[in-house]
Amino acid sequence: MPRRGLNARQAETVARLLAAADLELREVGPEALTVRTVALRAGVSAATAYTYLASKNHLFAELFLRHLQSDRPPQPAGADRVARVQAVTRHLAASLAASPELAAGVTSALLGSDPEVARLRLRIGAEYVDRFAEALGDDPDPAVVETLALAFSGALLQAGMGLMTYTEMGARLDVVVATILRGTP
Amino acid sequence: MPRRGLNARQAETVARLLAAADLELREVGPEALTVRTVALRAGVSAATAYTYLASKNHLFAELFLRHLQSDRPPQPAGADRVARVQAVTRHLAASLAASPELAAGVTSALLGSDPEVARLRLRIGAEYVDRFAEALGDDPDPAVVETLALAFSGALLQAGMGLMTYTEMGARLDVVVATILRGTP
DNA sequence: TTCTAGATTGGACACGTGTCCAGTCAGGTG
DNA sequence: CACCTGACTGGACACGTGTCCAATCTAGAA
Image (cartoon, each protein chain N blue to C red):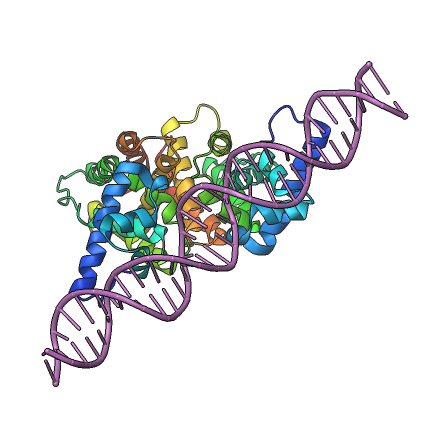
């Protein structure tokens, strides 16, 4: 659990683990990735990996949150509210499309029941909501924010199921965003 | 795989397996349920269970589809389009709330990659879309149907993650449905 | 009644997860 | 420099998944 209170050595170990997981994920995909191969790749024992990662699910969630945070878009400034929200969803979709294995892995990982996963789940959800709220401007209608967040989660789920690709997601969400915002102040 | 081509004896075996799974699921929840305990409960060997069920995920998906199909509501007849769609989501939410273990189980199960799961996933998705389209009336706007479907999947996902209860889902979706339909013809 | 196709069985297998613990090692402290 | 704390190790464990196969039942056909 890469939380507060890691000394330099520990932080380094975690960093190596996450970096190794990133590569491994890209190479073999989320199903074939095992905690032990990641540990091996990081030059660390499996026992050590498990002292920092509560579970494979936790690993994916951690990786995903970092990916998300390292990829904050410049906040869209256009005048059109619809276009601003679409810029957010397009950016997210593009980001997912660039790492489909991570996206696929995290989708089921976030359903896990570890406390660590639960914690990260909230942080990730909050990140989405923030971006939508910001794009909507001052004092956004909570119903609209929630609807956008639900539709976006739904898109994530459907892409995770293979019902659409992460690449298609961008265009599909444009339509959905327009539909949701149509007729709202 | 309870597909075409099961004779009476096989059909009976499958029925016993699904019935046993239903009970087991209610009693111990989706995580603690194992294919072997289900088989035991059904009075059948594990090997037999696996000749009809490709995976635990497949079991959940099968169970869920049957639950869904056995619980079709009378099609809502009110004049108000919004109310008709809300009747659909309310019914679905109530149905999920009545079997939270099944709902929780199927949420991650449907992310599985078995061919059997993929098949059932499509059927389940189609069921939702049908219900929404029917409630919207003649010649519904595809963008609206898709938006509703995505928002609903999102709600499923969030409930599956524990961000809301299946009981809350009904009320939350009322707002979402109203938001989506606001301003559409 | 005997025969036989096909359903079922038990029990092994390889593999992954997550846990545990006694033992080792490294680097900063005295 | 010797020491000691705390990170790290290796290797075991219990458990679940999903696969396989030779041996056994069992019900309907001949």
